[in-house]
Image (cartoon, rainbow, N blue to C red; front, side, top):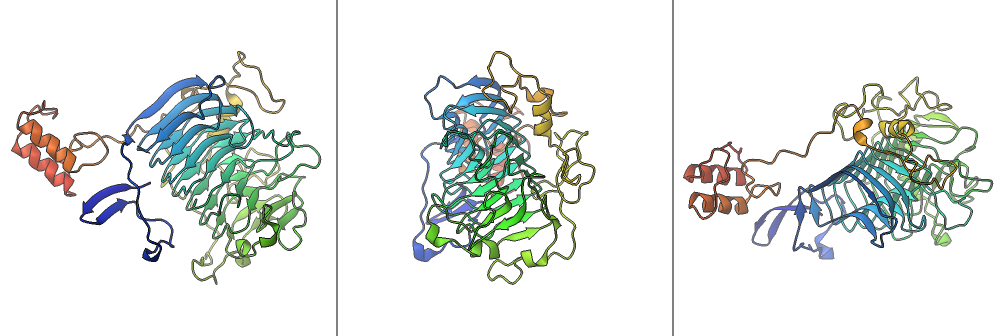
Length: 460
């Protein structure tokens, strides 16, 4: 989903531009236009219990742009707690999501779908949910960052011994997604509904294990990239469970140590005849620390000779602090190092990982928040429903939504011809003058025209 910023005849200008490099005129690409949109709306400071609801979603953002969910406690949703459906530039942050009604297929925390784009899912707690974040249906440009997932309970196999990844890519066309700073069971990119490309995992701690797992548990692998998931980047992550994982990677043809490896690459469990060696040869790995081999700065794992889309071999072992933040965010607690995870971190407070992991703010909030005793706890592993309030966890509030430009008369996030017409109406006395100066004249019309043409909006 993109924003149309200009239309001139049959030429439409969009923002952002197309992400994937395989768009071409020979395939006759087209566009779909929404009849209605929701912009600049938010859901904040709310506790909601969905356990008696038959609706699919707890909070459903549809045809939405620049909307947000913040400081929400959501309990027992059906398919998902938050559904970003044909939604762009939405933010879901500082919230707590507990359990789903079925703990089965289609039981997610935050799900992106149907062309959702450029959304941010940041600093949330996911407890007893099959998969914390599920990116599907041609999702692009989304950032999942600094979330904490625990007890990813999946009931379909009866004994709960089938581990589900906390971060999951699950439908064709999903690409250009960033996972940064998360703590959870792992990353899985399957081939059930299609393949995914150009995803990046940076400075995450993926353990590849849950304490609920018993003997013979399956899919207990920090990173699973199934067949045809190519051009993935894994940089600066910490992977594995000390004493459990015993093999670096499980690859074709034998796929040895299938459930105790750090990586499982190229397998096609749904169509065994088409395992894919290119998953490994197009994969960029640099500076990941794992509990089997330690830190890997291996030139052979950088596809520098690949054409197209090769990665140049880094000239040193210095890693950026973040791939999407230019500095420590304002909401970050001063008691937690930033960034909290990576091979360059020392003295961390997660044992057995070489000091490379400090607990992220969402995890610290989870561990220090009291339990809501009005709810029973179905798990012997996780805490149960929390008395969650983000204001009690994080030292400073997150920045408010962007201030609306005084030239954006209708408040839809963009200044265009619609705003010019509203200003003209006010100058003609057709509508009430809403300018802060209290005057609506030809001068105020001109300032809106200038802003709509790309100039600076001068305050009235």
